[in-house]
Image (cartoon, rainbow, N blue to C red):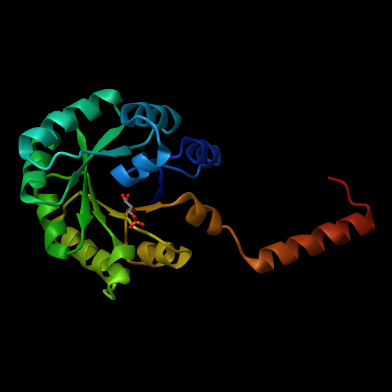
Length: 216
Ligand code: E4P
């Protein structure tokens, strides 16, 4: 399973990239706005830190606008994945940009049928938002499992990118449901390593080593 970090904070991205655990980055207009920096500068810097796919989202909603913004974004770096909304115009733009050889991440997916359409439009990634579904009492992880089955039935190679992940449990359940990628805020990635028994065990080992004067 690939891990993407869901942020536009280049400090956090650099820190996590140094662990060797990060395969890509996702951003959205809200995250870029939060960074307080010019869009193209942030995307360029992120692409230099992480060699894997970096999703950058268009803000146009019509086909021509999405194509023009998408091509502009794709020129920033070879590893830009243009993020397009799951609308008919977005799917049409997805087909064109995918045929150009550009990676496309179709975002704001909330149903299996939407995911089927994105695969037919040649998307590189489909982003089901599991946290936002959970927020309205719909099982987001079940959606991941449904998409997995549909993509496997028809051998679509669109990658399932579990998005809107809020908890460590979302990561585990997405992995069990067969997501190809999970994108997570930095705090969730850092939280995955934590276990009280690991801390307790390490404390005991170090105390015993100190008592016995063990040196390695
Ligand atoms: C993914 O690409 C989105 O940027 C993100 O996961 C949305 O998460 P949120 O629902 O927590 O805003």
